Image 1 (cartoon, helix red, strand yellow):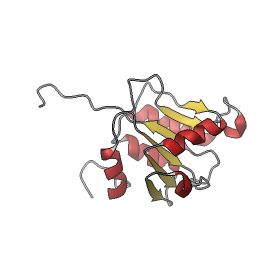
Image 2: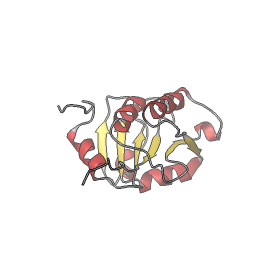
Image 3: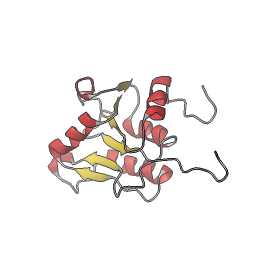
Length: 147
């Protein structure tokens, strides 16, 4: 355990978040997603819901303010406007940690292509369908006087 770090963030995920660079993406996927087959780097967090993992990740990682969109979700049942309860929970975590960012729907295969291209995938225990989210990492702005 470390001060100031959500205890849900284990050493593997902490190392991945630290190693990621600006513009790299990380996906948090539901329990049905074929994470082992699609991940370049995989962290298993099977006992935890995706929104809880998202909240922990966003407590450490900034979203990318250099692009117009930095948080993405799938389209439930092929409908861009359909809001599943899990999406509302994702939006709440984003609003808490990264106000001003919206959760952007991506349709079908392009969403899954983006997960396959992600720097890392976190396999959650989320049992709700479409409980997937992709985040694009931003930068930590320097503090005044810092080297």
